[in-house]
Figure 1 (cartoon, helix red, strand yellow):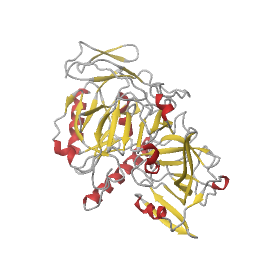
Figure 2: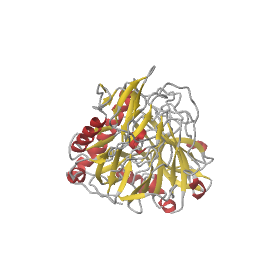
Figure 3: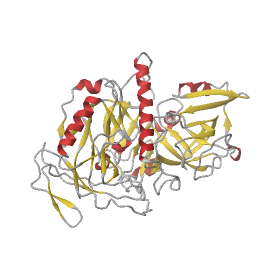
Length: 497
């Protein structure tokens, strides 16, 4: 591998200690350190001939009261005049709706994330024993909100309009869920706190309940985790998430508005009158899975099952969610795969992983055994045990100049950076079928609990046959393109900051 060029990542930590921004650069694995007044600064000899590194500037990782909320660059948002482009923000950042909500602890983040991944993997395990599988035109773009704290569906949010006249509501979007739902008045038992006014269907002239005899009511059974029942011949839904979050209420149709030119009448959704769990701050969920009741399928005539998003790397920046178009022409695609149990998920094949620019010695059969799911809701990437072990060993070797920090929860590779600035971190890249390579942004390599405990943001699966999951931490700043009609997923670097 040739010596690399440098790009600098700079961190910014806002009111949330887990938030960070990085600009990448490549450096030298043979680092010595020299103390200054308060920090130790790496002295870099000549550029290394083999390994690639990000340079993480940690000196700005201090608490801040910053409340700015910057939008994506004009180049990233140039598709706005082609259709719907929604702004994506993090639920707990200054751009989101849950700034005043109690933020989840690190333990809660990890618990919810592990619960979500285990649920995804359990579906694949059951199907592997004998289940059936499904496989897989106009435009619109919506800005996205950042989600590093995970509940039933993550915390990246977009804002849409529901009803006539339209009421503005912020919904968590999730590629691993199908049904779109929002909290509705009157609340029968539980309604969690949301910043926006809870949707009242009686104030909308376009809301309609779905009859129990309707085919769409029967279709609820195809949505994973969904149950349907009747109340006075009116269809009702119940959905339970892996972390004990839930929503149930009436199944109805309503007018959904993304922009002045992107309005969908008779959109099927759940009008939840009993809701509880980790959605606090958002009004509900926008399901971007592959089932026929998902937003993607319901809008297929207009958008041709094409959408893309870019997840922001910090709480103070925003990304986007496009429908019907992508923001760049420099997208490289890998085919969607058919995996038992993966009918409603977006699954792809990993072919190799590199650390510091060098390919890891992982047998091809390790990845072909179960495949990989690209998920907007899971935070951390899960890998087959053999693949994770190889990644961890290579990463530790190139990070041997830094003191180890104690392992925590699901993370076994952590470092103490309290006396170092900047920090050189090896690059990590994934290759997919079709020659597609995705180098993880510097912000997606480590997960910072604090400067004294920064952990490798990858986790080993429990078994060799468990499906790999590509989490949202490793997707930040990339434009990820989902082309359901074309049967492919694409990646373009530098979609947002």
